[in-house]
Image 1 (cartoon, rainbow, N blue to C red):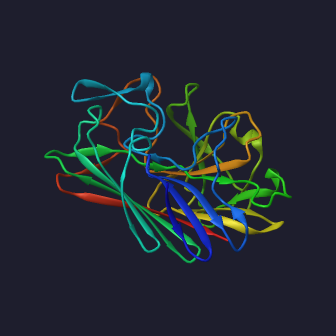
Image 2: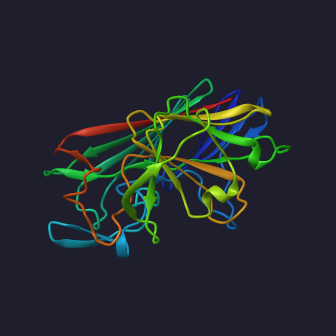
Length: 286
């Protein structure tokens, strides 16, 4: 486990998966990141690459060949090399996974400034052909932040929301290609455990910022994710799990009823040989 520590915060990140596992405010005595519990979910904040979510039969096709791939891809489970600086950690991994036929390098940088933790996800195409990928983040936050309050005392607030819509999944949690209107209440989505009885709620047109807030608590978390079109919200299905994951998704899961074709998936991103791209997510703790 690697750590950033100053007078105000302790930040911990695991070399496996470059996964953020702890954000503790010394001045507020608040643990912000979900600590993991087998009763609900052992994770904390996995990185979703090169796929987001599930695929039919846990496989995809590329140029006529089938490749196996687990849910959310491999980046969350590999070991990273680490370099450390003042208020900064850089995790790097060179892809050798034969089930993803694109040589590439992954660099995840955590940097702390004041109350804001920035997470840069850099993907570099080190091969000689166009690389296709999907990407998402998956940080889980303790709710309630104040242990004297209830889960239902909190809500999600979208200050930039337009006409929000919910992306709909099939019975096996694949992308149905359908969506429906999902109006908010003055930009707010009140939290209740039953929201997640059928897995994640994935919203589009919600803007690029969301906060976990309560009118009974001055403390909050705000996640910002520029240029990311979807954001999912989740906790373990049909439970009273005391956390919420805020999941900026650049791409959707595999399509319902057919094998994902990597060459034709419209919401995937392309990197030409030698090209790189950075997806930045910031998390502000109050």
